[in-house]
Amino acid sequence: MTTLNDLHSISSTFSNTDKMPVLFLGHGSPMNAIEENQFVAGFRNLAKTLPQPNAILCISAHWFTNGTKVTAMQMPRTIHDFGGFPQALFDVQYPAKGSPELAQETKKILEPVNVDLDEHWGLDHGAWSVIKHLYPEANVPVIQLSIDYTKSGQYHFELAQKLQALRHKGVLIIGSGNIVHNLRLVDFRNFDKDNYGFDWAIEARETVNNYLLDGNFQPLIHFEKMNKAVQLAIPTPDHYLPLLYTLGLKQESEELSLFNDKLLAGSLSMTSVKIM
Image (cartoon, rainbow, N blue to C red; front, top):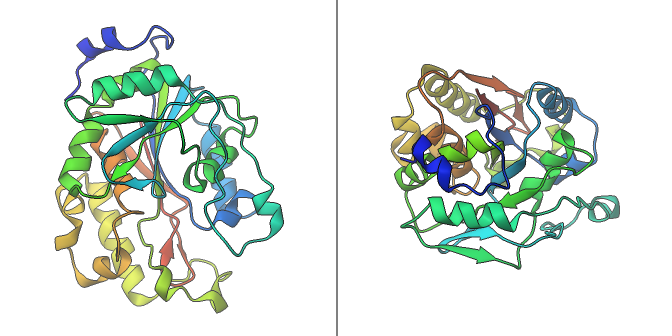
């Protein structure tokens, strides 16, 4: 695990700060970027409770790669990685700067894991569609760290722990995905029904939330061994693994709280986590 001694190796570009919170944001539909609803209101209310960050490091469900990469460009492009939505959504740009310095330091503190400095990706909708509600002026630099799809939950949980020193340099670390995320079973007819979930989704949400609030992360790390309801909630790990990055950074003295904790369209959840 990275210790406070490692702070000396972090670039002087980022000043020492009090320890930043860590977040997991249930990002849901890309339409949350432009719609007004209870969930985006939840993101805005969250922003009022956060200290101003020097930069953001986001682990998004939508950058799932063979190996680990970090965006290292000065100006990341806004990626519209979806289809079938209104033109207004494709017109959205989130012109936050990148931070090659933070990318270099992230690469350094994750050693001996090999991290590629990426100049091609940018900010996918798992990042910009939620960060835009926290910082609508796009005045905080943002980098993304990819998720290596060849690795286990335990690997990702432990990799996250190495990022701890960044929290003392004003870096807000955000995991972005959805805990309950089964797109094949979405009930579009009831998409606007408040807190609506199938029985298995209700059970999965309750199971995961209980472990989160109890601070019992081991079952969550080994999610593939959990009950059938959780297996239905996590048919693929891409939207779940960002949660493990958030949990890997929690320290014993910190409190974990939930917000936007509702089900959606039968087979999705917007449950989000704040640690501070």
